[in-house]
Image: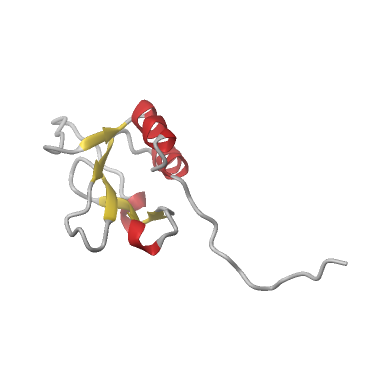
Length: 102
């Protein structure tokens, strides 16, 4: 007989899942920012205006993404600003990264 456990565990959230959630909220373009500090390994998903909408700390071993409080802050980009030097997250780039185990 199975005994129900009342201990909660965090469900991992993949890059694809967080990308789908952000685009469903209305974000049209998103970019991946690599870690600035090589000791922490925090990857960020950012918007055109620099808002961090999701993060993943790889050092924790969970590999899970977290939505930030700014995920619901959605602004238009009439000047079509693109952050310099960052990889844009598209459906294809997300699939490629997922295939590579990211």
